[in-house]
Amino acid sequence: MCLTKQFFVLYEDLIGEQKTDWETQATYLPSNTFEGFENRLGIHFPFAYKHFIRHWSQRLNAIKVNDIILPLFSSEFGGMELEEVLFYQLVSRQALDMGLIPIGYYREDYLICMDYRRPVSEPPIVLVENFSDTIYKENISELWFSSFDKMLACLHHYIQYKNKKDFKKIDPENQFASAFPYWNNKYYTEKTHN
View 1 (cartoon, rainbow, N blue to C red):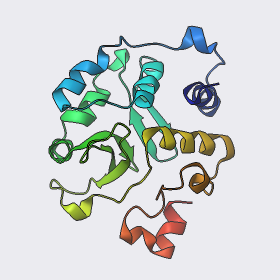
View 2 (view 1 turned 180 degrees about the vertical axis):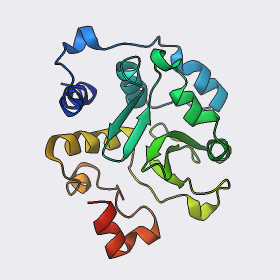
View 3 (view 1 turned 180 degrees about the horizontal axis):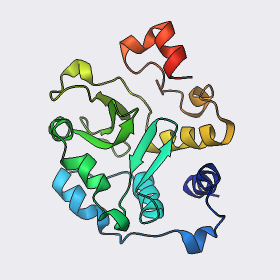
View 4 (view 1 turned 45 degrees about the horizontal axis):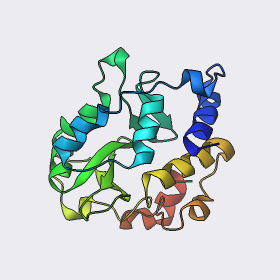
């Protein structure tokens, strides 16, 4: 069973949706859905991310796991959620100028971004502080997850086992609880990331 399908089944449990047949319930967006965004951004989204969005869009307007929010396309809301995160916020526009592609939020205080500052096919995931209207270098985290696929695997694990302690086994490079230096404060880490 592919990871997207496993996540689909577990997420249905989490949000209390009726069990559905994966093949008949999955709603595929047209394959060219991302082309406009990719052309506008000058990048190619990773396959895992496109696959994930295609399967979830038009059923929900966002995936919410713990404090992570991943906006989707949604016909109910005019399909603007992901586009809004990508292009229409001041911090998002600055992030784009830096080669960081916003795909969601962590605790609403941080943008979750794919890091395209170096040419890669599987960009790492970083966070950008969403506290002010200006992004400085210190507002960008160290690597948070090594790729979207690894982040999805960790979220899948969290839904299944309700713990984040095994994230290092799933993604040895992840810095889920220590992406920013101030997160290394013992009190901060225990209260917010466990």
